[in-house]
Image (cartoon, rainbow, N blue to C red; front, side, top):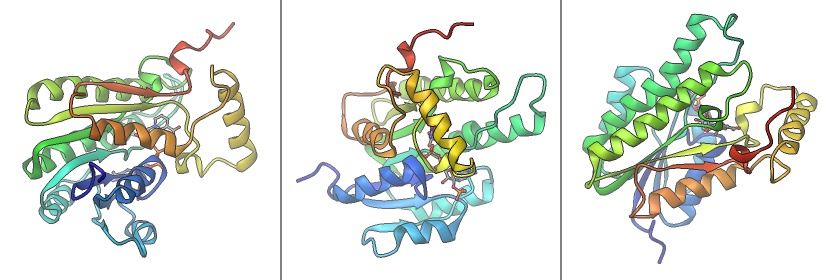
Length: 244
Ligand SMILES: NC(=O)c1ccc[n+]([C@@H]2O[C@H](COP(=O)([O-])OP(=O)(O)OC[C@H]3O[C@@H](n4cnc5c(N)ncnc54)[C@H](OP(=O)(O)O)[C@@H]3O)[C@@H](O)[C@H]2O)c1
């Protein structure tokens, strides 16, 4: 019997990319899964014909939406928050509004969503956040995104200490993953970006959503792991320094 049998798993960001893969893997292993994000029509398409997958709309950046979501949620064993938005731009160019919106979506949203879900988390439950490699291996024109990832990782450590031993708190830090996050990039440019990043990595390629999702499943399942940031990045942390 799978350890997810009979467990209730909420995946915020479960309508696309890595979150969708997490939701589908947890469902396949016997969990009841609740998928959330802002686009209800998209979530319904994902949940169509999937027994055990329920759609619960949520905009993490709105208090009323978080409260309504938490009211409908009921008891859960695991909360995974992969939802985010990313803003890129040179330090001198990136507009303050874009930077603040990213912190709202990727830091304050997950922070306050976890807080809203906490009364529903059963003893022994877990929270899994998502950061990204830029927190510790910066890229040019990504200082803001790196900073928000760092904030999410720091939150993970602090909450793991504060919420233990009742709950575990961890974080997945993906490197570049082929996902819906890049859907707006024209295909040729997208493939070029994947190839260029892949070439720079020890594993010679970018990752898949399933590879990133497996890390979240591990962090949910392993009952002696807390306060951990798990890199799933093809070796991005040890890649060769760029020559200038
Ligand atoms: N893919 C990569 O290469 C990569 C690299 C490093 C880190 N990461 C991190 O890994 C995580 C998952 O990435 P991904 O590739 O799966 O991204 P994705 O496919 O773009 O999924 C992000 C999801 O967030 C939801 N979302 C955005 N704002 C929201 C809000 N305010 N409230 C609720 N939902 C919201 C979006 O759905 P709606 O539009 O329906 O709300 C979307 O489904 C993110 O934290 C990302 O920063 C990804």
